[in-house]
Length: 363
Image (cartoon, rainbow, N blue to C red; front, side):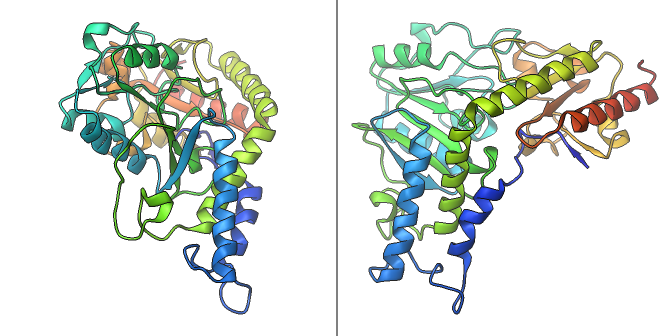
């Protein structure tokens, strides 16, 4: 299988797997199974591993904040929005192209939905739409079309009205610079070659966010429940590797982007071609049925949009928010690549997709 679905998840880095192994060992193999809340030696060692990971994750984020581990970005975004709205009752606003984990919270909160243009970029912040003493949600990199949003502009607009800025940085963390100005930042390990089942919420110092869960005062009293040293260690190792390989990964992604454009000259790019992360290519072709394309090119892993919504049969809310009609949206596919994608794999994968398109009568 040729894997071109990096926005859905990324392959686990060997370094992350290695970092996790000690903390998965059972009796007779070591003491890595200990509870990090225990006060004995083994427990203190596990707790220390969690703190090392916390520092590794924080190293790619702005200064002046705290990292809280969670089960993933969905929990993180729900915490930030639903509990954050209790602390900041002035109202909520968010982009129409937010991930479903945010968008469904926004709908539940009767939030103001902020528009985007036909290139998938947020319109300049309108003060009349920004709540006073509330929360504004602006993702950094869109998960479906890869466009990079003007987070700093929205942070300034939010702060001017005494509101907080929540940044969903899941698709950008470790890949593009995190802009200053955010008050809350959501992260997920498995998007940067870490394990599934762990994410984080970064909270700027001075922001008073209510705890997510009660019962044991873990995670600095903000999220009760036994913390997994293995998952945290894997996340930390993946973050440290992303920091070390930041430039090399970016250069590799750019080479693959150029190759993909050369191989798909007849396809139309969805979203701005420049103000985007170039490891995400969302394209459409008139006459193509994306769902059939996936069936005919079954040895290539790619998607029609967000993995969490791929089984619903619904047209992408992101493409519709950009103004695409149903036919164009259904003719669109999302391709994603990264650190472990070779040029030959990408070439072979795109040739297979082009071959599948020819079966539909599209040359």
